[in-house]
Amino acid sequence: MAATLTEVAKHAEVALSTASRAFSEPGRLGADTLRKVLAAAQELGYDPGRTRHPAPPRGGTVAVVVPDIANPVFGAFVKAAQAEGWHRSQTVLLADTAFDPDRERDVLAHLRGRADGIVVCSPRLDAEELLALCGRTPAVLVNRAATGVDCVLSDATDGLRQAVDYLTALGHRHLSYVQGSTRSWSNAHRLGIVTALAEQAGA
Image (tube, rainbow, N blue to C red; front, side):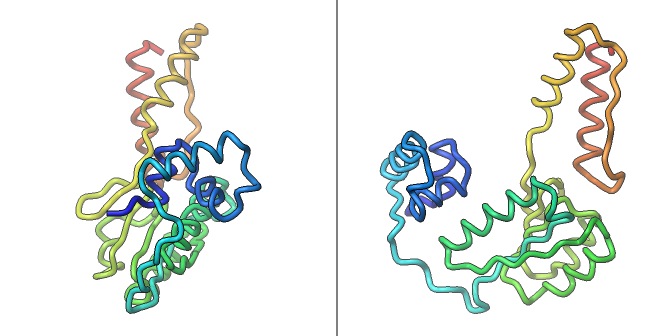
């Protein structure tokens, strides 16, 4: 099976959008970065000019649902999704739910059956309702762990461990965690990690 642009980006240790630019706008990259991407592509056998697969019956549409497109994290995610979608001849649709679970519910109900796949970032609804709303449309959750569905999670443990270790090494023993929305799964996940690490450090 031919390598994907995502695999090239990972091998070259660059962002997906950077790897895409190496083939579409190489002049915008530094010489070292461009060399890394091209070397990774050659090593993995990636062919940017290969014939793309024909679009799926419903147009190859993937919907990306985010709680706030103004958040730089989600903006970067959508940009990378669009770059990958372009290489796969897919159309990437965007829906912003404004952190509103009712809007998220309406958006997912509307997308069901109209998209070939749905990516839901930091959902506010519980996993069971999410899956029910998506129906037979394949779904992927980002920043939410759930059984019965593919999930993409960041490794928050190492970063938080470094932060707690740094603060305790400076002599701080009373640490505070400023949390986000109580509806956020990732927030609750990080809070649990911080609490456990602080207890271990005696803070």
